Length: 285
Image 1 (cartoon, rainbow, N blue to C red):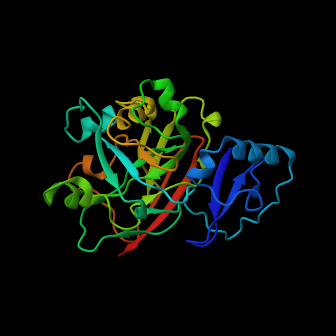
Image 2: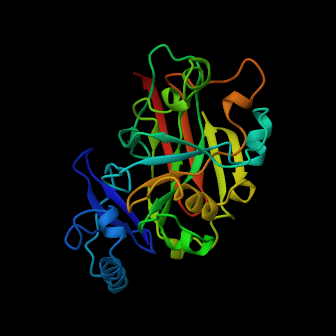
């Protein structure tokens, strides 16, 4: 299934995109798309049955905002330097263990919402990423099979980053990762039954129409199953938590000087095979 949330920010309602591409209203069946729904197999089965029967009312998508596909996210866990080609372009050695950092849940916005360039920023960068949304509590998971069983769905994430704040201002990466609007998510949450292999997904990103990133999750150093298993050794992952699993090569930081960092007025578009497409206009904060 392709689950999403539509409507004004803070007042989104649950919806489903059916096999014919028609937007369907789920508000009469579930209260929202959130961790509680993803953890409730019976509720998900009811949604599937209603979608198959054609009984869900259609929604007019014209002019309708698409919000983040998951409500009430507990935490956003991010994995750094998780693609061989991205590590190479930044001059970093592939890590022996996953590099883990956090984004606050309030950085998450809709897939087509405005991204704000922080004040005094000179190095705002782009990163297309596969997001994993947790559907079952993951605590000290032992196997890759068990880890994948904890996945409630997949989505497109844009891990927007300010490289000066991240790298040159001391301390942790978090200062360059948690600026407002720095995690567009969506458009859809795609359930695992529609993603045959999370390690065979193409990722692309364009800036002002120019292709900048063109990679595949096959190049991940630590695949999705290992990321979920590994992270669960250090923290409990709850339904509705999100993991951004890293970005392939092609970020501005990896380009020759002068590096083409983002500016207000730029337009970024990104997509992952089968998971949908995002488009953001950048404006000053």
